[in-house]
Image (tube, rainbow, N blue to C red; front, side, top):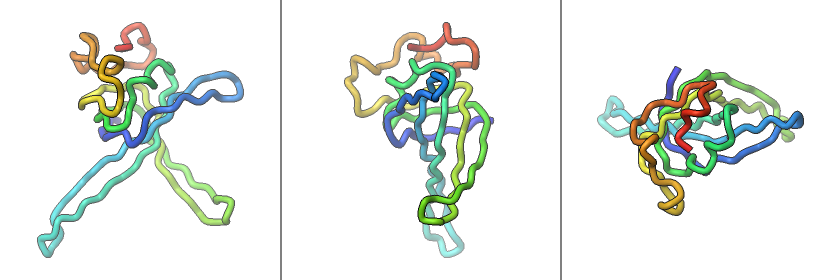
Length: 132
């Protein structure tokens, strides 16, 4: 499945107890429509994302970047420390396609390269073809 949205914060790399690195980030998907009375209604859905293929993606996954993601969607539910039921949506990313401009970083370090200009998604297992 594919989804697209805007990164809500810079990506962060975490390491699991067994040493595997994962890039965590969140995207916002905006939708709007007019209700029966003609008022514009805007909805934003936030989705937590995990990219397990390489931590090298983290530096260019910056807040404000519009991306198209390929992967699998999953839901989770839990009870927090206060006893409240919580739920969230996770997206396990297998390929990332940057669409929009990079934002909030030094332009020299995050501007698109020739490899990024083709806007091809980065498929799983083809780390040599990654644009970084």
